[in-house]
Length: 449
Image 1: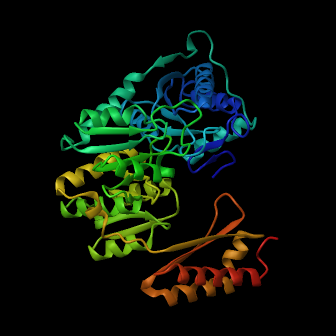
Image 2: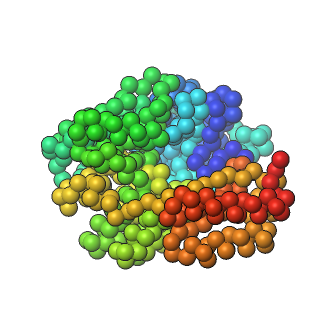
Image 3: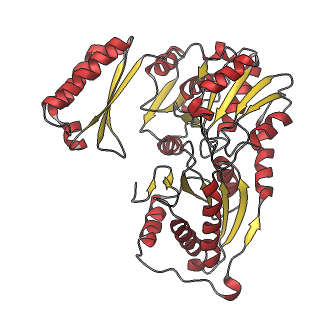
């Protein structure tokens, strides 16, 4: 990770950590890098979520792009995966999404995607950061070289058509609940499910610039649970602010997490001979219950660092076809380069309709193990993590748990914190073993006062 761009873009509180000047400079550099630098005109597609500040950042990015000679194609309010899709299929040099995902309205972010719809290469992001910090100059376009903006709502419509084409079944008479989080999917999701024939019940679909993710969406799934039960729906789906993740609620009001989704669709692919390498890709934070369920049906798995970026990198390198995170970032590599909450919802509908089983039955084999996670603020993450006595304590717990649980000790990517997590058959066991490792970290003097 660089100075400004993390694993999921440049994020911060609008006009505090992330300002309109930053946006102008990002546009300036990208317009030059893909255009004037190569003596050509760059084409960049831009989408945004419903935050009030997204409009400011949209205009700032367009200003920077046009000043550097690029044409900016504006998709308006749309989802992150739609920008990735359009960047790829409509031959754009790159794509930009303005969103802070599941964060509150006062935060925002700028996600930069390459022409393949993938997260931008690190080397380009580092060059943008240098330019932001005043290292180097970028010339202004002049006369007929100055860029323009293009209203590109047609791109969003093309994406909606793509989503509808993915379904193999009619959703006729299926009662579906959608929590669109007052965010980027507030129009798109309902349009897709309506077109496929579902009886669609929508909540949190009145964005006002300030209510995105507020007590709604995938980070507040309890409201969809009540909505599904109260309206006696067959299934429900909750998206986050930019709709790159999806969680599900079954007909009984139970939460179906990303881990459940990996199991349900991974098994469905295996049964049809479509699970290349016989593997699903998880992160190290997937629940032990997922691995036990996959073992029972003979499906193997890879584990990556936390972040859908690392899941996708694994899929590109290995050819694995499905991967994701417990939070609902699920990637189907046949169709997409990033997590897409609406695609995930459509794929779960496909399994339910193909197998003619309710979602509760499909998800039942994944039984979550209790989990305890504690954060320990330390003086030095590497010193604490690599201490021989700490490692010995971790190994002792792992050996004791055997195949009845697991321990994971990892460094936070953004804070001076070590995370100690144990999954086991009871909360009491989890607490006991987490505390045993933290006691060693404390005894060795690593804890920051």
